[in-house]
Image (cartoon, rainbow, N blue to C red; front, top):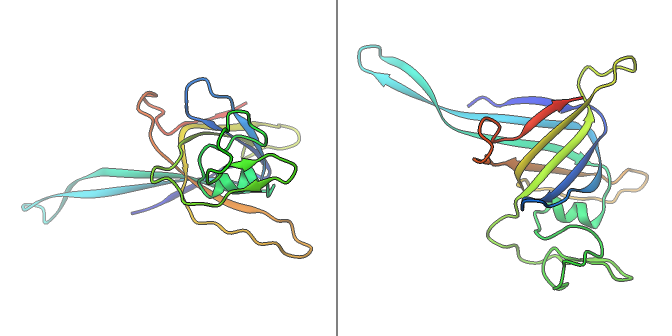
Length: 192
């Protein structure tokens, strides 16, 4: 199983997320560092026939698509996003009624991220990353945007507070296909 990696954003980008409910607006979770990498991991199966003693044909049985980046801003919202908590939108969101739920950020005078037991079903989100396209120069600036409609936080991550170092947060999203977008089920990458 070969994994193909592509650096779709080089340098600093901007990450936005939204609920995947129709009409939901994106909210900015801040800058990314060190670019954004998309990986395409197909699982191939050999169709064998006795006459050849080898594969007569190879087919793709499944594929796994993921996005990896590092969030430059270590906020409660970003930590909740990286750790897969659902219902996070922003500090003081008026839609959050139960401030005791796991993952909810209480926007009072002392902001608090509730670390509790996750739901068995991960929160699916729309994901948008905007940043410099590969090959961008000062003479030819180009912006690249990646947009998908079904992203879930997948990988383990950790946060550390070190003296004299930027606190950054690695994050990885599994991209699930959205059957309502034929031909672009895993999203789009567009240059402007």
